Image 1 (cartoon, rainbow, N blue to C red):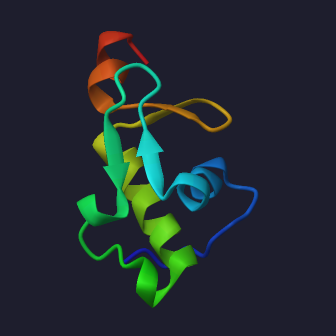
Image 2 (cartoon, rainbow, N blue to C red):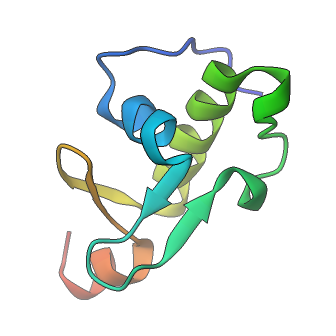
Length: 80
């Protein structure tokens, strides 16, 4: 489990808080709380946002701009 705390200045955390995960701006691929082991919003929503943000980055998701993300496949295709 990630020990980092929710940071309202972290755009990854804020995106997870807003849409409960991440959606690719190119292909609509999705990564939601249910897709990530140990990501249990009912046991702490802020913690779940941190966990899914960390997992998205580990899996190769890229932030394009504020509240805009690219999945690993599209990121790779576009050299991001």
